[in-house]
Length: 164
Image (tube, rainbow, N blue to C red; front, side):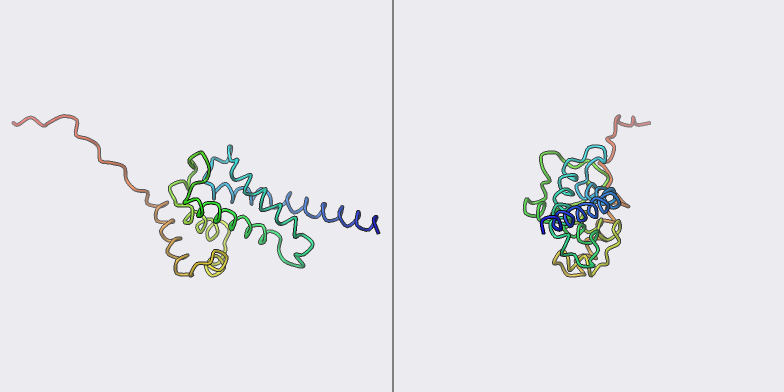
């Protein structure tokens, strides 16, 4: 009995390691986009991914045909949403500096799910507990913000024009 459990645990560990080896990079990139950190310095994204992978590993034997990538992505999104929305957008001590840092956390989450991960509008809405129309609006707003960033203040006039 003990030997059977040991072999099952070893098989489970090998399967999970293979999953992480194949999907870990993409999941880390998604987490980095969510946290809007620099890809070379992304401790919050790494922590977010670690927590999502731990949750996936904990239920690995109960997946029964479910895609572990989808499950991990769900955990990642839910963990990010709960962590940022409950703290009113604070992601930790440092301010986000990545390409998506101009977006609010909710906009960033929806944009990453919809455009980077290819999650359907209805699925994203169900995952986040939002109406599909709200997901569409937030995605459109986030896309517009990225494509048409707000302009900075107008340049100050340096010298007065002398009358002629």
